[in-house]
Image (cartoon, rainbow, N blue to C red; front, top):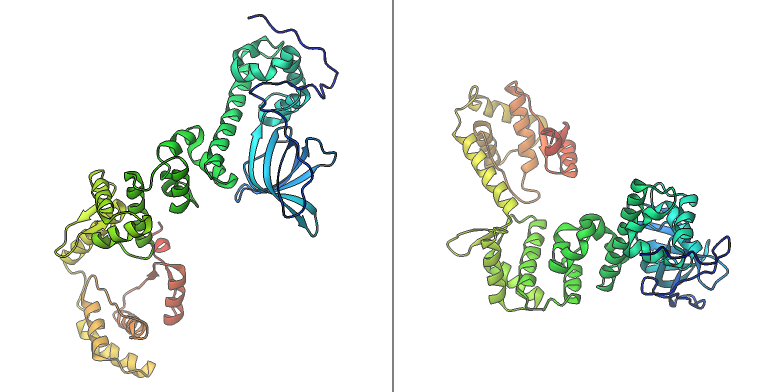
Length: 434
């Protein structure tokens, strides 16, 4: 293939445009009124603010056909000065900063001029490429520069002084840039916001399109901030039907996860199937079938019961089995130390006098049981006397000369325990140094 002759051009390259499928054409838009939706395309001039944690960014864009830069705000992927973007959003008026475009979708687009391509290449998009090398690339290939980068990147070795390694770096960076653009276009075309598309790409990388196309419901499981409804909407956009087996399976996992979030270790099978069928508007038989499929794939565990089966997530099933085995081992181990039974009555009598309370028979029995047991569980609703039991039990253990540690599942519970007992209490995680 012969090297194309560089076209005649000005020193700056401004105004020279090329046509073809890679470019997609220029887009210009008239100034829209506040509150209206508009689409603009142009070159990113600078990034005035960005938060890597939230993804919120403020950028200035030189919009095609306009003499004044526009301010674009919103949650969207990183925008590099020198690159081009197409953004759709609503025009808003900020009291302090004036007119802004609140971005709803933002996509990278190909540079529109040779000078724009130069700025794009030396913008930081390609490590090691500054203005000099960027200019050499454009001078070497002229109007075919974009086609070379897209289709024949091996020809970058023809650029004087670029070298094999640097040419390979340019090729890799440009391919990554194009891949991100293609992924963003795909995701946003199927209902993902720029912020969500960015999180999906961050989680799955170059495989994002393949993963989302084949298993859109993975989004609800693997991507932070994506709920089942969002994944279901994207799945519907991809053509997955209402009665699709994978939809029913994803629905079962979602309902089970919701039950877990409410503090339930498992869900009764019949209720799980009914709740899934109601949420998805499908037949209960389909939901039952989804549970069986998930069990066969070992994505849920089922414990047989007399009245109804119990459906667990594998993680919580393993946790419950592990806890029960550990409790059984503790209960079966030989008793350690001396019996506290002789100290119970004297300690409780002293506690009642000092605290000016009278312990109920059930409370005295619970304290005696706790004093003689390796493991004990005391339950009851608010106001039944659980805290008083803990305080009296601590007095008993102090009388026996034993050291105690107080811990609770959450920081708030630990604080309440500390306030009620006037002793230090920590979370279980901190106690176990987990």
